Image 1 (cartoon, one colour):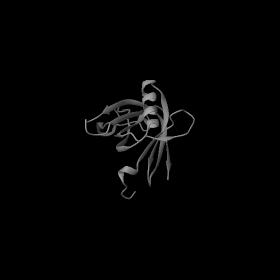
Image 2 (spheres, helix red, strand yellow; image 1 turned 180 degrees about the vertical axis):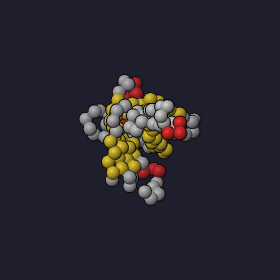
Image 3 (tube, one colour; image 1 turned 45 degrees about the horizontal axis):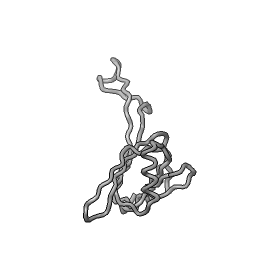
Image 4 (cartoon, helix red, strand yellow; image 1 turned 90 degrees about the horizontal axis):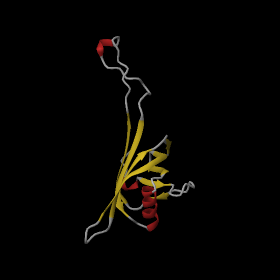
Amino acid sequence: MPAQKGRDLLLKVDSDGTGAFITIAGLRSHRLAFATGTAECTSQLSPGQWRELLAGAGVRHASIAGSGIFKDDASDAAMRELFFADIIRDWQIIIPGYGIVQGPFQITALEYTGEHDGALTFELSLESAGQLTFTAI
């Protein structure tokens, strides 16, 4: 994948559960991380007494974090509603020139910050809540 502009990564949410995704407004920074747990299966018979892991047995998860400013009331209202109602919805993370990651996520943190002479900003954290799919573009 050649170099890409960070601002081109998009975060979208199906805010009402109908499959119509809206862009979360004004993200200035974002992070998408994938991780998996391990399941150790080392025994007395493990070669050289080296630890052995069981392939495919670990729990996989993804986390997303972003910060930015609001461009409209709709995305702000959608995030607030999902957080305070503890709703899990489908999200899309669009990585230009790479692909789209889609699946259920829950908002685990929502923070607002404001300076007296600046714009109101927010920080958002999401954790995967089910199986994710990847579609290459």
